[in-house]
Length: 240
Ligand SMILES: [Zn+2]
Image (cartoon, rainbow, N blue to C red):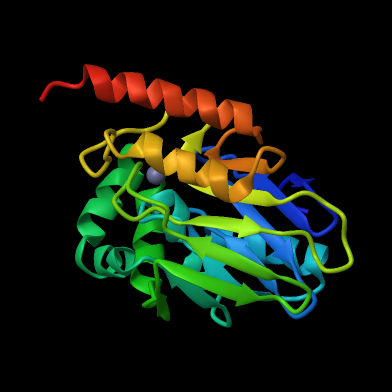
């Protein structure tokens, strides 16, 4: 194993990549393996692919990119056999804003040569979606855009237990929730809309779900509520 994977339920795993502490999710289904986000470099992605082969006993068949930031998307090209799902404007960003993606990655400490390799390898994701269901044979995983927040088009991945499992629902929130730092706000964020988006995330997952932030430790619904309140206060104090 290259990374440390937490087993959240019998068939759902996550790891926190050492670089940027970004979450990678893995759902091991009867007919395939779904990855949530893909890391920053092809080297990271190759290590993830090797770990998945060991954990899931199969290749990655689908990838969901929760949003457009470099640490979530740039590893995706390594998974040549996988169908990639993301919001339409992530596809647009990957094709038109590679200079910005490169700047962001290098500013956060990524190796420039590795970023250039990942950008050169980028392939256009096959599925431009806001909402989708992915059938993994023993359950359907829901992908949903529940409103603006960290970016204009964040997606969450809602994973029910497999048909023969009693486990809990797992919700991968992308950067709509962060545990290891305050939520990251930038020019694309919509702080006014974000609290209501988190209300919809909580409604979709329910009180007992396991919530997996884009960065940081796994949290519960109460943590998500507190982050919603923090963002509400932030929105209330924002100028204009
Ligand atoms: Zn982000």
